[in-house]
Length: 306
Image (cartoon, rainbow, N blue to C red; front, side, top):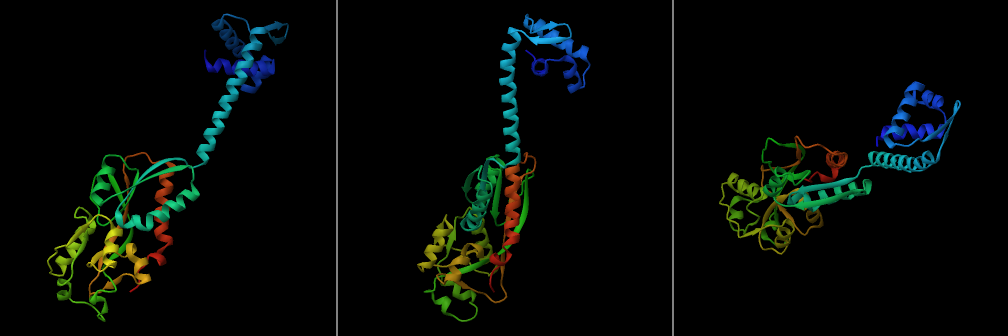
């Protein structure tokens, strides 16, 4: 049963007039009559009583009109619901985030996003740079916020959104923090190193900094959690190298202290990652925009004190 013919029947049955329907649909009256006759032939029953120039629904026509009213009412309802969804942002997002930005940045972004788009379901995976990269490559993530240098891939697009710096950290109980001014390379040799997981970019950053300083990099502990690294440093079990954003709160509170080196500074970038060829949903586009806007709007908050 052709929906087009049913729609035409429904309009004719509502108007009870071929001529009025023809004018409404901008179709000739003979064409209307021909299509109604085709529907009646397909069904094998007459639908109208034709009395002179007037038409009336017969018993079959009234029965069919009852159902076409329900059918097209449901179609109108579906179209309204679809329009409502088009006007709203909805769906599911699978997000990846490396350890450092997962501590304070991503929670704030997700909180703002959910407040604005409550119909979007969020699935967040936190891992090291290589894990997140592989999940992106396997199409398990829609979007990622990555700290550190990126792993180039022809199918992934990266947008740099922020340049942070990395800092040497120690407990206030550590003798190095009592030294006024800057520290020396020799003083670092006496310190235990608490490093992030060796598969992470944070490990690579720390290793490259020690190489830059001409010092051996021999961690006494390898820890997969930035929060655990910070906790162990607070308890004076060693020093660590972490991005400023990840430790700003502790530095401001004084439970961690920065060890400075004259004339030395090392950067740590943050990138948004998404697929080059994957179809972008409105929900994902809003998240990308909100993430970029977050870094732009929070420059003063994210900037480090010298």
